[in-house]
Image (cartoon, rainbow, N blue to C red; front, side):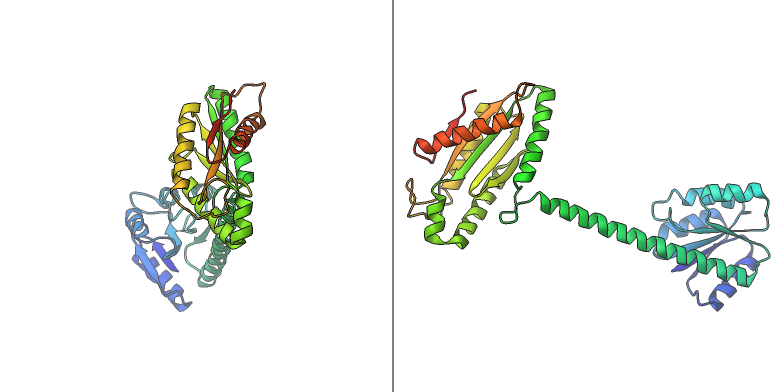
Length: 316
């Protein structure tokens, strides 16, 4: 990890480098002014420059102003800055710490003090970097866990838990905006017979194929396709009127039909088909999402009672 020395005194830069290299710090960079330091920092991220030793008394832009500017740089806002100064008055030190400096060294430089402070600062930086890395890993793990908790393990689409969350959210949005909310409930016709005769592995493959087709039919980011349970699926369509939802359902039914997954034991067709129930409401305070689910589910039941492989629209 490199150390950047910012000092307009050649003698001070040389002395600091001599002490640092003698202690094993080989990657030393130099700058005489704050603008030179800024250029070096912009060319090197914090993985290459891990510490800055900077004089307070610099020409044009002093060390305190430079420190403040460095703390606005994305890649160096956490890079520790140790001020090197002959000024030990409280005012300058207070300003330096307020600008973001982590420590200070007084001139003339004392070798033992220099190396002790640098070891302390670098140890602290290492601990902070490790903590941030762990925090990032934990955040990534939490995001993965959140994703997994909302996903159906078999099909890879949203699960029942995510369906409940989304339909509640969209219900409240539709209630607020006075917009229609549509729900399609569907299931695979005669799926128990399919499982019993083709085996559960084939049944799982069938569910995956159906889920994939349903997911590809979802054309808007707000539409949700979820596995409701077993061979039953649901599609939440925000801001969608009944006619559009019915057209959507018909596209889905045809897409499943064209898969032509053989089902010799079906009472409806020689291949896999689906039955669907469509319901649309404009939410009001006298209703809940359960009302919409029941309407759609009842329409699905009617679809199956009337011969399967069809769409029924709930009468509201």
